[in-house]
Length: 237
Ligand code: SAM
Image (tube, rainbow, N blue to C red; front, side):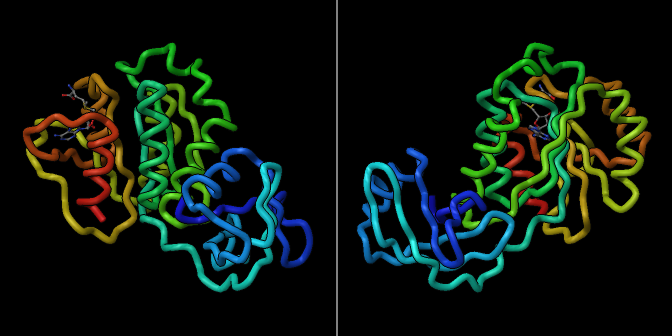
């Protein structure tokens, strides 16, 4: 937690904050080893970042007085990530990583090789997804939550969503064996599609290319989803 992310519920009155949840309290004590009088880095969810003075820390609550709130969060990456739904633990880690890297639009997509049971996972509950996003923001010092949408059918995605998404974005499908290498250091708004653990099937790749996406690869090594996404985002932006 490189930033104490404050939600509107944490603000008690103009300029004061009360944190009561056990996770942040434990982190303040055990990782920050914070004591009253410390000036800590805070950010308001969806708003600016700055410093707050810790005035009290007990097992039940931490009280802060806001000091400065004059820094904007870092700029987002110009990317909408479409991720074939990975297994729940991998999803949790991937959401955290991509949030830390600055992705603000995420679509979780069903494809042929996504296990249907993954859609029933508790990790897809709104509160669970929110938790992973918050961890990513706290890690990276950011306050803007990504928007996560679920797209449970490949064909409806292809026919109804993809044309709009490609209106003002360059579509890139990461798929091993494609003739072109992943581009580097691009600035253009991008739609990045990453396959499931078993990969996209040929038909899906053909449909995505026909719709206007470009295929690309990351080299000969086949990477796990969470590694591939991190490598792709780093290389692209
Ligand atoms: N056996 C699968 C295949 O060949 O497609 C491997 C899938 S990989 C574990 C999961 C996803 O990560 C892939 O669908 C792709 O989007 C991305 N990926 C992993 N390694 C890649 C590489 N070397 N080039 C391009 N994409 C890669």
